[in-house]
View 1 (cartoon, rainbow, N blue to C red):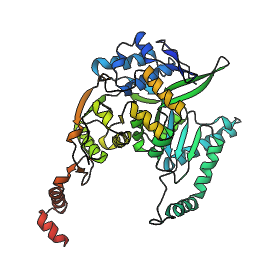
View 2 (view 1 turned 135 degrees about the horizontal axis):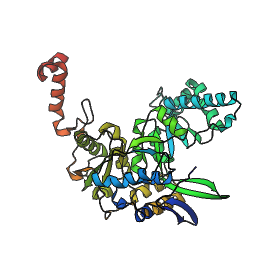
View 3 (view 1 turned 180 degrees about the vertical axis):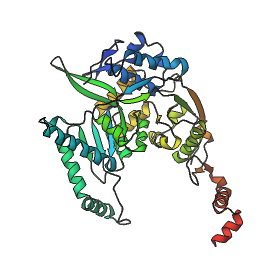
View 4 (view 1 turned 45 degrees about the vertical axis):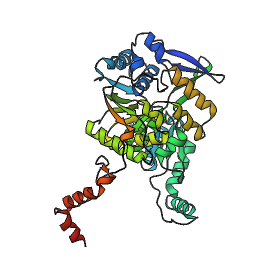
Length: 420
């Protein structure tokens, strides 16, 4: 339940499409003591809104909120904050044990004379069945159908249990096998960019609007950062804690700005681009930090290209690879079948919060920055072992010979001869 002390008088209303939404305004918070927060990175603005909305005087205090604004002084902070994601994303390998734990809690509650129906996830949880999928048939028109049938035959007991869980627990949905991998399903169907929740207050229903945020049990949960959804991968225990309404304790992170300029040359792919990005960020060192992309080059990248970059956050070592809301965000939401009312809310909310990015948007303040001219990206290969070991395609032959000689401990010609 949303019960904020509202120390900075940030609670306001927003009218969109004939509906009224309550939200915690960053612009109002700035007027009421949080000076300069309009210069924060967009990703930190989401953390700030989260604290404003959940200020209870215990887990979140006014000093915690001020720490986000004070981040601007040193562009880093040693303050620990309590972050409450809006939802949880799970895949089946880690999700099944979580549902088992919930069922065990219901049994324990029942044995103690309590009502087991009170045990439910406190935030929305989506479990996508994808990690157990195997391919037995391929190359034929009925391959997909046969693989799905085999999948249900192999995992009937697990799927029956998950079906029970979906019916028994509130706030719990299961995406069946054959739909897609979890971070792709999240991007294309589940993510909303702006989340809403109905609360009963003084006998009336109040609809809150706030940024869509999450944690997921898949390391590539970060793919959804391309839709301006702040989230990252966590372990099963952390995910269960969030399911039960507990916050994630984290330091206010450093934010590395990655400025993109120019435009990709014809024939250059998102894979080539992401290999450049991974190499640059690995060299920089971004473990435990947020990376946020900005600059005029954003308008020359499709959202699918941005999703490719965000997806690789585990490879470049960052907690997330965040992209702000812009016109491409709205276009993608429309292209993937989101409702017009939802898209209108995303646009109106982002504009009201000063979080809608255009080419004229002033650059935020970052801990440090990197810059890449998209026109300099060239066709590349990854490896041979790690994605940050980028090899330009024109250097593939000598790079292969060097790698082979290192593996064999011989010179390249001798190694090649030994393979004949």
